[in-house]
Picture 1 (cartoon, rainbow, N blue to C red):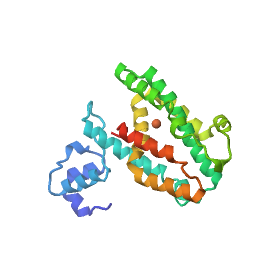
Picture 2: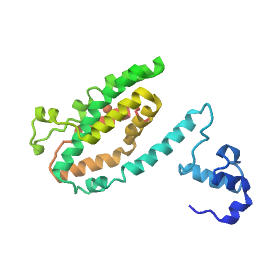
Picture 3: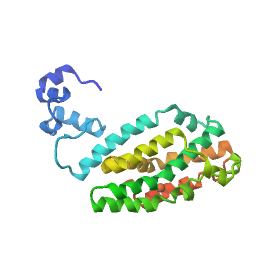
Picture 4: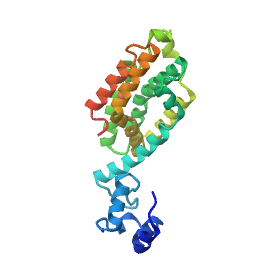
Length: 236
Ligand SMILES: [Fe+2]
């Protein structure tokens, strides 16, 4: 976005803000000139709140978190794999690799939450992690077990497949964060759970993939899991 220099020169406070010499709290959000522009920047998620305060309101937290996770989604879904997957251009082996990765990530969710249940700083947070650990524990087998005749693998073989190096790296990182920084862990978990907001696109993608690769019913568990997340308000 470009702003005319003339406009910026007329508003020294706004110029200081753009040049990061003044926080947003110093600006008049209701002013006729820069006020509207700032509201537009806020609406687009370009502005975050002053990070030096001691306390924040829930709606401020939600705003900051959303700005953050939408930036992450841009990076995550910008990976070339997603375009190829979306156009059903991946090989059947790659497709299985992706499903296996999802299974392994789900398998570690309960284990990671258990770390938070032990190490989080207050009993209330530990209880929330414990509930999550118990709840997530069986989701990998209930919803994400990558079983289909097309893949030609028996359940016992799938169970014994070793996680990809990237899955292991992610799991380890999540476990360490759950021990050290419960809030950071919660933000990442929210990033994962909030994908229910894309459920319609996800359902359409699953249907396309099932049709293109002859995987009838394969994503049924994935769809049920999205429904479960919605029911449990995981993205609220
Ligand atoms: Fe789950």
